[in-house]
Picture 1 (cartoon, rainbow, N blue to C red):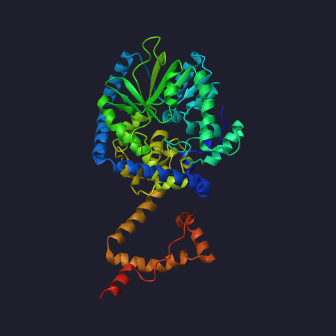
Picture 2 (picture 1 turned 120 degrees about the vertical axis):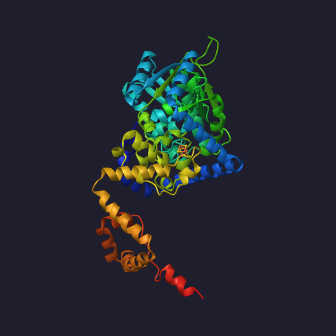
Picture 3 (picture 1 turned 90 degrees about the vertical axis):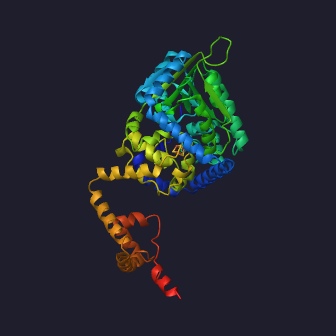
Amino acid sequence: MSKKDPAIAELTANDFGPASRRALQDAPLRRALAKATNTFKGRREAALDEMPDWEALRTHGRAIKDETLSRLPHHLTRFIEQATAKGTQVHFAQDRAEACAWIGDLAERLEAKTVVKSKSMMTEEIGLNHALEARGLYPVETDLGEWIIQLAGETPSHIIVPAIHKSRESVAKLFEERLGAEPDLDAVRLTQLAREILRTSFLEAELGISGVNFAIAETGSFLVLENEGNARLTTSLPRVHVAIMGIEKLLPRWSDLETFLRLLPRSGTGQHLTSYQSIFTGPKRNPGDEGPDEMHVLILDNGRTDILADEVTRETLACIRCGACLNVCPVYAQVGGHSYGSVYPGPIGAILTPQLAGADQATPLPGASSLCGACRDVCPVKIDIPRILLHQRREVTRKLPWRAPFERLGFWVWARMASSPRLWRIGTYLIRPFVRFAGGSNLLSRGFCRLIPPLAAWSGGRSLPTPAKKSFRQQYEESRP
Ligand code: SF4
């Protein structure tokens, strides 16, 4: 059973403020994040340079997702009919408790002591490992990053690169402490060691659990994408395979796959294609065939029907979990995934977590964005994340009635000033000495900043800029011939 790191395991989305402040002081974390996110950004840009039709592809992908979401019950029914006809057993779970109970019961029926898992955000969302461990079962993550995270007792900090926050040195130290490995192994030896240990788990496991990247209503098939081959072993060696998917993972037709197989790997890792693309259409047909004897698909709602019913936030369900928005987000790059206190960090987490957990359980997250729009620009299915964040901020303000009048007053003053050159001139003239004083580095100025709450919050992590002696307008007027 993995030992949990309480500093990470107990974080909630409402801890975003203190958690992100702590992360900002963590220099190795910020170095690891900068290195990894810049690498993925660079690879994505290089992959897109070879795609003159990228914008058309994004538009097409989004159209398919919109079409699917607009008739989701129809596509779900079709998928169930087709999958059942091919021998797959399809089940429904309303929430995480139902899903975990069903999988736990199945594992007990199989008398499975070891359960192998390939990477799946859905199993993270429902806390499956924890639920299985509570029943005395031993779930083993088989994706290398997930395995490292499990060994460290942490949670993933990125949706496609779960150990993005870890350097090679910190992984070597972890292996030395937990596995008795030689000190300071290089990346190849670390991987070899993980591989040797995992091979035993694959051979022992009675049950293999995977996620689902896409499910095809037309054929009852589903697809799992990965780069290490571990998902293929997870889904083919154990006697029983369970795939867990959210209701939004559907695509209507087989031919729709082509679009998403081009969009997803380029956006996420900058690859032309993911290394392993496994498509499942039922369990093995004959005793001599390869593959599991039993194949189950567990379709989970867990709040998605409510998201679907909301016209503003519905597009969140178009997400294909590529992780591109995390890699370009200036907030994520500074504070990392654990600060979000949710399995879904970064821009997609900032909009999804309040919808799944409830807005009052994730109040700071809609504010965890500079609204620069980089997430919207890279999203392969054109999800307008800043628009949803603004909508959620309005909702948060509505629920905090004491905040609304101050914000309204502030924005009213701002709007009046910004729309009148005369008022703007007078306002900036009057505020200049105040900003100059508050931005000073002497003790009096710093003490003054700490006394006024909004200024204290703002100046806690940065200095107030000292205004120039003359405004831009004055300088412009004076420099005119
Ligand atoms: S919101 Fe868009 S960019 Fe972010 S993970 Fe989802 S599909 Fe990828």
